[in-house]
Image (cartoon, chains in turn brown, green):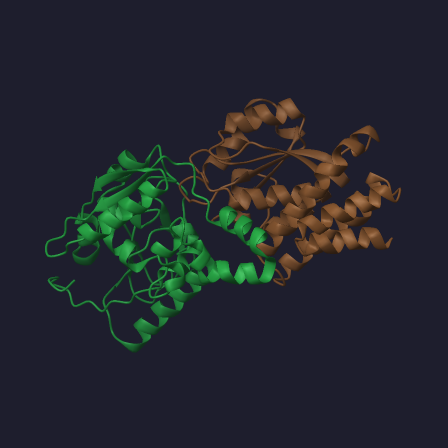
Length: 212
Length: 231
């Protein structure tokens, strides 16, 4: 479908206005919202993620691509709801308590949304208890925690502990990331997945939900 | 260092490198190797903290002394107790010293000059101009605001080091002006040179310093007390 391809290319290039125009044209041509999503927007963000992982594009390109996708999604959302199209799963995301850095967290949110996941963004300075409250409230399968400082990354251990204390640990997969985080640290604190960048976080999150 | 009883050769590392811990760690390891191969020293004194895991896995063929701190802010504050007193509830608070201000984000690189990153200056910034050319004005503005948006702290700290013969009043004034323009208040903190002094002159007591012996590797503890250990 060439119109979906046009939409995909516009998103990949971060051309928000073009993406919106092409989506509106596609709808007026009778193409269904779900088809635009599955054949235009989601493949676009897949390609963006792959190129980011391969160092072919960088954070600026990723930001504007995700922005273009969000603009297109705003048009499609009510139609997708009416058509009964559901997200592939739900995630809560936030930067841990004491830490106010949010660029990485925002990128992960965008990539998760680009995989068709409904994301509840708790913002920055999020306590372990707030993560658990939100996960329970939204019945989330994924809890994604970000930290940029070695002084705040220990809060991630507290997040895992609170989920255990509340009997919620088996209901969620806990993902951790951020500049000082490592695979070894992830294992040490009992989290489930460490990802080194936003694109791989999107891939891992989708795999979790698809295999759930 | 000039007045130290020890004879010390100094090696500086570009400041911006700290945002790439893996690359900076590799760079530090190369520098340690080169320095200890080319000359005979008794110790390597590392003026770093854990710094985003930058120092994890470092090895040294001679004893290497490292302060037990998360980053250099604790060194400037003089002790982990004074650091926690000022930053414990504000671990993400921006802070600055005279040296930090003078060097900008990256030593000698005008792209990362503090003034150039001030509000109102972006249109002349080389990185911004490149984004405009590549992605258009609207996207460039969005990228800038996302990448350089100020974190939600209401304060930023300036640490006065009170070192004799070093007047950083101009740095403090410029930093304060810049922070005010961002709608924040400046908290003036009194620095304390004693931790840095101890790094240079000793004693390297175990409470404040880790001594890495030949054959050992640096490991992170991720706590607020010991911070690092060896394996």
